[in-house]
Image (tube, rainbow, N blue to C red; front, top):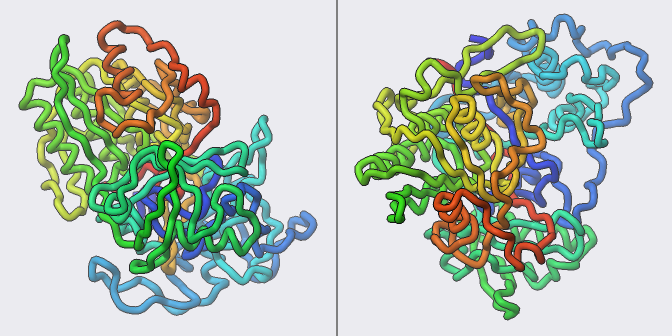
Length: 532
């Protein structure tokens, strides 16, 4: 076992190149407010520098309390769970917290030890930062990454973040988000004026109760001009309204639909998000086509996917449209199960779904194969571990994708192609997240730092710029997801009939503004659970 604890899980990241305003996804609470993650204001301007000091000249000398890098691997076990402020009581599963009394210095030594042993680019981390100069573990973690740039001038490591452990576990095991049940897409350029459009409304959420729909444009938050406001006070007030940090607080919003403004009041709540929706069988002239929209590979999704594929198999589905346009990723074992349920045993037997490649200090880890039985993840409605999975045995599948299709979702596409399954992509290029990491819980915060790169059965994993679509089609916000007349699904059904991409509509040609989903980094990952 290569991880220091069975509770740790390897994770493939898929963090947005541009960070979200404060949180995102299903309108969840702000990780920036509670976990110290870097959270730019909605203006798109860079936030103030972290409180970490400017590094001293690169003398190669460590401060007296810093560890010799050659001994940091051994120090990992020594400093893990030594906390300046230990938690007391039990976690959500009734287990006592592992925290022991320690110091801030212990927490910093723990982070440096982990980085030196497991970070993919450990030999590029500067050793010029003095632990004694830091007053926050989060600020110290922020500098424990490579400062290198890519050829295009972007940061080589854009996937470094933290999340409150309790919130992270609630999202993964229970499918719960704090917020309004609302997902936005935003313009990336220009930053002002801002264009934020509703892309998804969770059934049963405050957003649905308020009557919001796909395509509605946000214009005001608590009577502040959202489109053009600037300045710290306005930005703070907007963040407070958009991303509540606790349930029960009401905020006012103005939206615009077809040019007409309207106001709604929504109260933040814990929203249970169903990751699998719109399961249906479409009768076409060429046979029955299964369709489902799939939003996140979490524990809740495992049973829902099995139920969906059981329905498809019972109804004689001969083709499938898998809608992952907003799926940021999640559990890689769920991704491997999904790929198996599409392709079946004949195409996947003995083949690797995804193989992680680590730094030169780590030995090879066992690859993820195409799983034919359920893992049995914790959820409100779990499936029994070892249950045989239903499968369709398809030699091709159509995937609806956008730049919001990340990580574990990309692994589904890449893994199927590695098994010689034809994957037709309709929509846009995926986000491009081939890297991975182990989320490390320590003292109430879970740390995410790149550890590996994932490749398929053929050894391919070079999609840092995304997986290109077969047909470029704009996301159609004028119709609900799952409507056969909605742009991406209509194009998929048409391609199935005539094997040709549709001509761009006048509307899609006119919309040249690049949009990205607003969601937290923890919603763009792929988790590799430990072996039992």
